[in-house]
Image 1 (cartoon, rainbow, N blue to C red):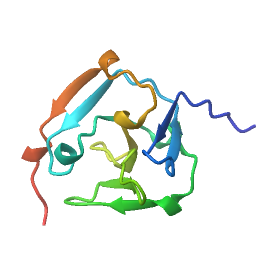
Image 2 (image 1 turned 180 degrees about the horizontal axis):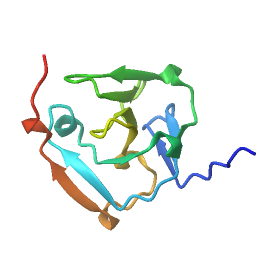
Image 3 (image 1 turned 60 degrees about the vertical axis):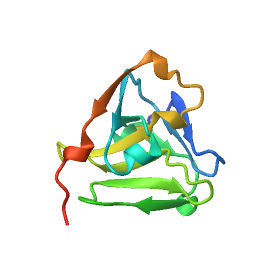
Image 4 (image 1 turned 180 degrees about the vertical axis):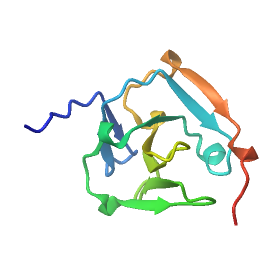
Length: 125
């Protein structure tokens, strides 16, 4: 028997071409001052790949990586929003980074937001 996927949130880009669902409880998120996050203004929460389901085709997504290439930043080809990323966490396990700003009706005031100093991480290459 295949387990059912009962999503808690819908994650999408501005134009709706990239949509996913996530089944997770987010009590916290991070802001990061690395070269991409500070420009994009993401608030990220991390989860395992089995809690995320991309509901649309990957045809509307473009991927960007930099530095260590551990995170594949997923962007909508049309509107440029980045609702999620995929990659490898510090523990070596696969992870999905959800941009909490791309969840419909998510109350950011209900979570703890922590600043992460990504600008101080060593640059590779």
